[in-house]
Image (cartoon, rainbow, N blue to C red; front, top):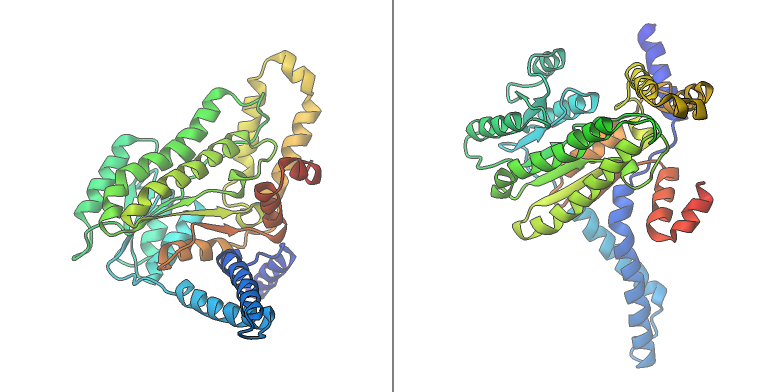
Length: 370
């Protein structure tokens, strides 16, 4: 009975959650379809003008689109062979890291799971649930010695016949909630060291191994790397930086045949993955109390309590996270022969907002999303 109630609860949670769409397929097909339409119009005009044929542009568009989509679908579904390939996952002690490690292990990859502390409960769970191919590493991305030691260990423990590392998934995350005036500089520095500088340094150290097999770097970012949100300045700031770093690295690695993939989950598709309400409330309270008395009086205690709790509730008090869209994006980023540059595991509303922000004047976005 309890199992049935849990299934009903999970089902209801998924039904209540805003629908996530396969944006990767839409993004891959949109430009080729528009190109097919343009070619159809031009070719129809030329054929009709020269009186070679009276074929309509819609007929040509239909055939061009059918051929284009069939070709795209074929290449989109090509996948690499997991046997003998290795993947490094940082932040394997957080909830998302645990799931992606298990999923890649089930597919057949040799997974190196990097954790802040090698001897922890999460490491024991992974060892119990995964195959003998799993390696658990101590990897604090803010410590140079951990990163170098992890590289040396991976290089010495590659499967037979493997020359390098197929993929690095930069999944280490850290967030803090508070208005800019409340947040002390050390909090911004910690956010940068973990989310941005950690990603940069791990990528630098492991790129030689990735280049050997023309593998890929997969950076887990956030929709907040495009769309800012109040009370999340430390997180938004560094995620914008990771987006820029990924674009630069992609351009530099293209000649080596190395893919750089960005996975951008939205708020609804991450939900409780990154946030613990008790820790965040305590952290916000400490930052608030560290602010000068005059500033606290300007804001008021009621404003602090109301603002923090109101903005945290959607993340920590909402429905259980449906991780399927994000996991599908991460697995595609690792397993597809021709991955997209960017996977957006977001809802329709989040995707529309990103399109408006990226392709229309900023004033339009500010009017629609004040």
